[in-house]
Structure formats: structure tokens, C-alpha cells
Length: 140
Image (cartoon, rainbow, N blue to C red; front, side, top):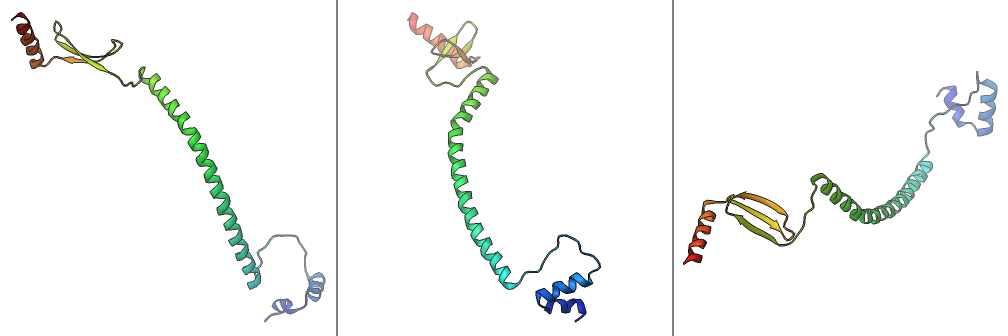
């Protein structure tokens, strides 16, 4: 064991006296200090306590966030619906849809209760024949 390592065995007052009298320079600085087993156990206990406190606070935060998320959901849904309506210049509705035939243009139209054309397509051959059949039945 060298003389520097022997300083550790001196009482604190004697060690300070040696440091003050023999040091080449005295500076303020930061350094790491090894922990004793008791100090290490204290830090482990503190870590356990703080971890438990953190878990409790994080659970509270999660519950608060969940409440806000639930309050935010209908607002976000309404915003999304409004954006979709603006983007497509239409809204999705439920109601009766009437399939109407235009035999002159040979088209089938799907029309809502207000008379708005929802969609259209060309008549199929059997739909054209059906009109001929219906006309024959009326005249008979």
C-alpha cells in the first residue's frame, strides 16, 4: 500500500490536515465517489420507493389522459365527418332509395326521397325486355 492509499486509513481530521499541508493545489471540482454497502442499500431503498410513487402517478396520469381522450373522441369524429363532407361535397345518409327506369335513355337511376340522383347505370338487356313485357300486359 503506497502513502496515498494509507491516507484513507487516517481519521478524517488528520487526513484533512495532511491534505491541507501537502497538496500541490486545491481546486473545486466534480468527481465520482465509490459507495459503501450501506449507502448502496439506501439508494436501492430510495429507488424502490420512488419507483412505486412514479407508478402511482403514472397510473393517475393514464386515467386522466383516458378521460380526456374519451372527451376528445366525439369532437375528432365530428371533425373527420366535416372534413369528409367538405372533401366529397356530400354526406352519407340512410333512407329509402328508389330504383327508377328511364326507358327512353335506357338508364336505371337510384334516387333518394328528395329526388336526388345517387347513382345511375345503363339498363341490362333483361330490364329493357321487362318494360316490353309490362307494356304487352297493359295492352292486353
